[in-house]
Image (cartoon, rainbow, N blue to C red; front, side):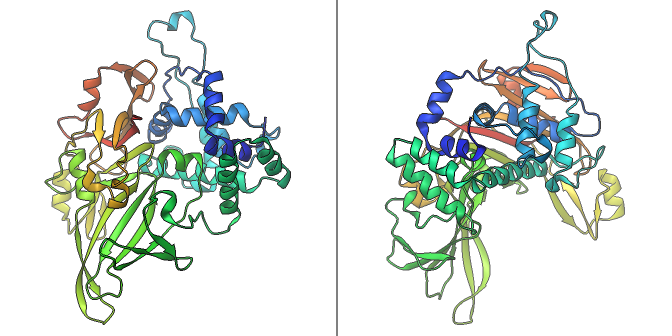
Length: 450
């Protein structure tokens, strides 16, 4: 057993370590169990069930819990969120009584300890028992919190731990990767790649400052590029992390283009346009050209063109369909007529209830992929592994349920708090209600490895 930071570095950079663990350790069997909704916590339960059945995430936590030295004093743990998720997931690894073998499901339980642990965490201090929260927002907070704990566990490694780790690794390539990573971790600024050549070997770029660098574009003109937020590597980033590339074309500029690289953990898709009816439509809309008013270098007003592409594809793709939008100038009568009571100054928050068509297999449209990434012929194929639904007409309140794929059995189940039902694959694609009250809100896809 080793410190968490050492286990993370091994699992992230040493493929043989991962392979050896997977070969010698069968993934614990997950027994489906409902979570008792004692205080409007369905927003939390649906996300936890989604993550439980996300096999790469479950595998990462299994490696961590099996290989890490456990703290004897849980109250002084520096990783309370990681501990809480691992402990919660252990409740699903149970032996079933004979009378339960019929449907293969276990008894429901109250995730009281988990809620207690996370509500003490500063990131979740706003949670109030009995108050409904947004599932997508909770998902983001949880992944960010886990990411930060993973980062701190590497930062807090002692010199001797690092020396023993490096001495134990026979592969020079792996040792170099870990050394480079440790240099990035020791840097108070977030993870910076010195150039983009790690991802794009043919990309001629050179750093000009801490903020950015210059690239030579296809037309041999200079292109300025920068990262807005730098992110250190962690299992969360390795699984869910991708990167956008925003390209801004401004007439009358010294540099023909300005490129901004932004990390993402989920792709938020605008579905408000009447022409957006499928997942593919929404992705294509993401990469449509936007026209912006801009002041050029010589002070004149010009029309700039901005376009956003996906530059790096995640292993697990989380898609958030933006169901709630702010609408200006609502009247009292209009609100009552439509059943909305979400007043916000002179407008309201409306739910977009239309059905967005999605499928079990999804290929990200090549139009959405940056040219720098496209030339390496990336794998764009994904398979659906989970869907979170929002029930209700309002952003306040409502209810959440989830459909998840039991990968080892190739079967789908629907989890509605304590109620679990088996589904046909086709039912997952038609989970929305015709009356637009129940709608797909979060989709989770896993990359299909060729």
